[in-house]
Length: 482
Length: 126
Image (cartoon, rainbow over all chains, first blue to last red; front, side, top):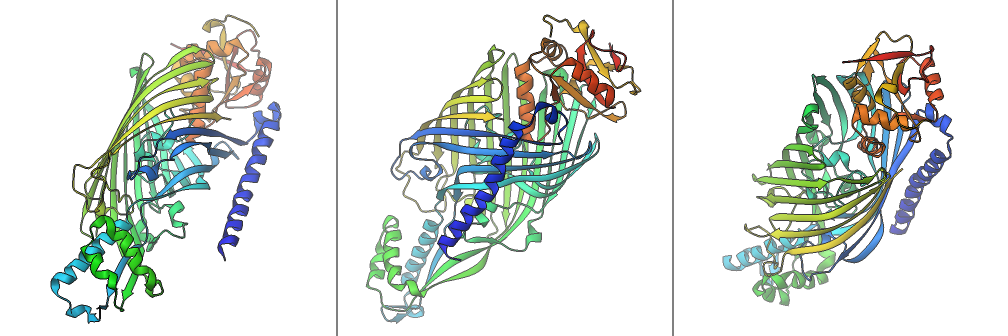
């Protein structure tokens, strides 16, 4: 199938998904009230549109994560299809059209296997010369791991689940479900969220899988005035369908059974203490993938190679491109097992309200054991959100808010599917105002200030140490639940 | 529709076959927030009224400590989270009484003067 046919097929596929959704929305609005009273099938959802202004900063390593310049557009349209055939059974599907930035931290790795250099067999080159070549190769590989981003208009199936409720203590859920981790990942919809952006630990750099497929047991009970809820699941593990479907994505899942995951979330809510809620989340799972990488075989003399060896790292990437271009026919692609790793994720979340103030936060920690490298990455994320609800009247409220988020990681080389960023910590400060109309429409405006850190040495050779790593920008959003 | 209700003017009604004669304020709150789906040995179906009825605001203030907008936001949040959807809103109190009288497991609030012998009025536990 050629690219044109694939694009056409993609449009048809989106059309097939979007048209029934639009018809369903229209139909749900057209249903008379007396029919809706007894209906077992409901369609609802939300939509949001946003605008932002980011002044581009030359050479900033994180610019790929953001839409640069001025931008405006519909960012999400989520539709829920909710069917309750009887009192104990419920089927729920959620489709999401998104205009998201997809971050793939990977481009195909590049290695070269020189056979002869200027007529001399590689094995007969001096050791120092071969070491220099090795240094170039390491640097080329590092360059190839710099984050690559692209905007993606796509329709995703966020969940398609079937619930069967045995009793209050036990409901069985099967299908694709949103991972019950912390607060934000489950809330996930703009009309519910106070801020415009998600915490990075629940979006760009997720510490938990956002959704999974499998089986879940869930339920809840009250002990006096204390409410206890739980979710326990077994799943097919952490998959990134967006990336797995990208043709250019070089990592492919193998040995699916090694991806199996398990986890859960439990929360306790105290009715007498202003509804203070405390929860804990956990997840453990495997990840086994192959990487496609390019091998450039050089068996002809190259006048550029010597100069390449003496070039500094900032020049090598472009020079390497020049070097390899005449030999493109000789670049082959091979697969190798790149990652066999295990994730262990744990988190604590809490939410408390007092006198119209609400404070919520999450602390998450992930350990990734990479059996291929023997390395361990400790990935830590924390955020706190404070907001104040001022109800003007029955249909209008104002909520100013402030949020701080911190992320850091110790060894990105052991966690290549998650992160290969040329910095090692990320602080985000957000301040904004949320205006709510009639309970289901929200206007938000906020300023985000991001500060990336480079305190610890990282593997990737970069040229960002002299760049101002801060990034501030304004964003606005309108969201509507229907 | 009438204006200016007190909580004592409210009646919590259910199907006559319900084995319970009373309900606590905490149970009402949990039912209307979707925290419990079973009560008195049955799957419970709470009914709501259109916001044009001031009795709705009285009910929400007294039992849930919420106003109409907060209650709407609460259920919108539950819907987006996938937890559940809001109780069905009926247009008139007479429709509510009629529905409750014919659906075991249904529970609702109406003005006391609207309830009749086709439904059971529950006492509120202290």
